[in-house]
Amino acid sequence: MKLPQIINSLLETDAYKFSMGQAIYHQFSDYKTTWTFKCRNKDVHFTSEMVDEIIEQLKAYCSLRFTEDELQYLDSITWIKGSYVDFLRLWQPRFEDFVISKDAECGLSIETLGTWLNTSMYEIPVLAIINEVYFRMAYDYQDLMKQFERKLDEKIQWLASGKYHIASFSEFGLRRRLSGEAQELAVRKLAEKDLEQSAFVGTSNVYLAKKYNLIPVGTQAHEWIMCVGQGNHKHNPAYSNWYSMQAWVDEYGVLNGTALTDAITTDCFLKDFQLTFATLFSGVRHDSGDPIEWGDKMLAHYRKLGIDATQKTLLFSDSLNFEKADKIYNYFKGKCKIAFGIGTYISNDTDEEPLNIVMKTTKCNGMDVAKISDTPGKGMCKNPEYIEYLQRCIDWRMSHE
Image (tube, rainbow, N blue to C red; front, side, top):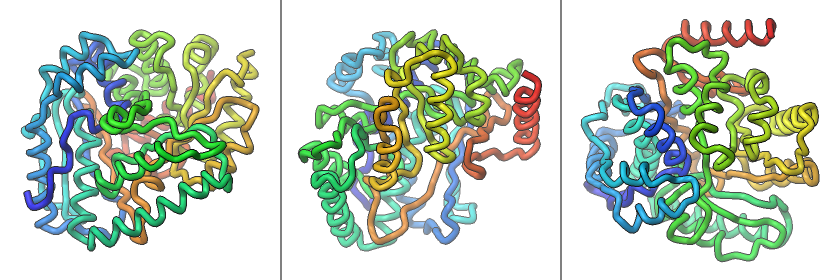
């Protein structure tokens, strides 16, 4: 490696990887998945030297094991069970699960293939490594850090002065951070500062949550709904949300319950988010589409079910900055509990455009899987015919139920 090791702990991943990982371990340990990397920036190219460095960094990541101190920390989290901690004591990433080449338009092709238990855990470290290698090798990194800290200090002052009020928020930027150094700087400064009417409560980065005594925030991602709902080929994929919520409740009961609504459109989600699930889940997360329209729709749904929405949380996490969060907070204030997960705006804001990179599940148990979110173009599937099939299933259900 030419750069310092980027991932130094297996805790350095998003909290929802452990939430989903435990449920995968207990219920879907035989599922196999394929994940595919994509760079959405049209003008970004990864040089041969960058790809070589990414490979070496991934090999270093695959040499890590959980320490007993880290396992004790995970065991202290209310919803994590001892059986899963014992599994993690034995678990190690496998570099053999990676297929990496330079044969792509952007210069970098990565796929991971293997058990869902393994491949799910690779997504976040892979993206963090790619980001940091790119920004350290394509730019003057020290100059970027100066820009980053200047903008960070300005944003923190906006909250401390009361310019923006965003209530409870967490940092969600691990996958697209400028670097480990930058993310830790942001988390530390936010944790230390009195932000007046805003409250920094946690981070998705479990390693930093442990280090700074913050809440490790995160429950489930689109992969959960896609694989549980579409990985069993006997399932009608238009009912993906029902299958995935039932499996979640089987694992956690009333704990750890924030449902993601937009894997196959929020309207289809609401068909399954009826009284039992809407009561058991403490809230819902927004990740695509207009946040105000979405929030109004969720509040109307709670009212229709006779549920007091002021006891439920709407968590917003789609491309937020403090200005957007302030507007959302002021609109929904008093109507429900409000929380925000803010990513790139906190962890990678410089004078340069951040990378828009993703690592998505493209197959489960040998068959295509896809999401159809509330924002066109956010999905990723190699087979257009499968997307058409999934859309037809959704359309039929929406018009016939």
